[in-house]
Length: 427
Image 1: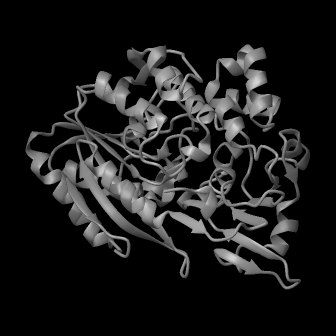
Image 2 (image 1 turned 180 degrees about the horizontal axis):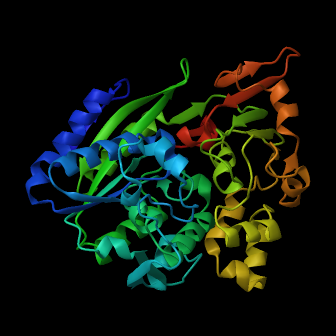
């Protein structure tokens, strides 16, 4: 394993390139074809973009043919503008391949309902089809899986095997794994390395995808709140779980912000480059729900919001059923085949609710109407109006006191961590 990391380390671009070269050098002589699996632009701060560009350049110079398939999961395909923003200008556009999570997959096996019952304590007992992109079986000598380890609402800590069976995965395992996480209670999963969903992913890969030549490159990134700059704290590479396990330890140190008191009002800003949907923007809910006091308010500044789901079918389901809490969602699953056939959407509806503990006010720009936002269960105020009071240019991450004495807790990017009141989060 390659492990270059530390809670105060700041890995420069030159050091990062040297690490990528060190990772690839022993393998270069035997590599004819390589597939790189980075995240999409919704993980812009992961450093996966520069790593992918560096790896591409090193491999091509060595005579290797390289394809790049962003691990979209259920997200929309990346536009040319988004590809260039994330990966730069050097990779030819025809090197990028689009993952089709509904049609471009192959089923490699089935994990039985008895295993799911064991993982969930009897809450679910369905079989799960282990489905991944057909492209993974297109004769590559190496599959380079790149991404960031950071607290995650479904699996506990993001990336590693999740990048394979969700990012490059198919409908069945995406839907059912997300629902497994929802019924197992997100608060018991967030920020933890070993969870029921992680065991599902690891078992799926080890049991059915062990013939794939996967090498994992994982990062840990921390935002320097004084400068708002992203600092690369950790770089790890291995073919086994060792890189993931080491990255989790550092992510727990630098990406989990434990508060000594509960804020009554939390204001979260959604960067327009990353967040255009509630499917992604609800990280503002997931990552703060263990911090906000009962009866408090979450204000989500969402200037680029233009849809609810990243997939047209899921968008339709969110509009139909809304974020109404666990009991209402489980009842809707029981009574409606369309939601029952899309358990990932049902899980998202559960995750995106405060369960009545605090109110959620979304503040969109011109992309969706206030009535549309209210129809899915949120309060709504125009972005311009709320940003005039809670200006993302002047608020600092953490507690802020407004001119009239109101105290708010501000988060400039919810994707970068997990915020929790000490009494609600046990290590």
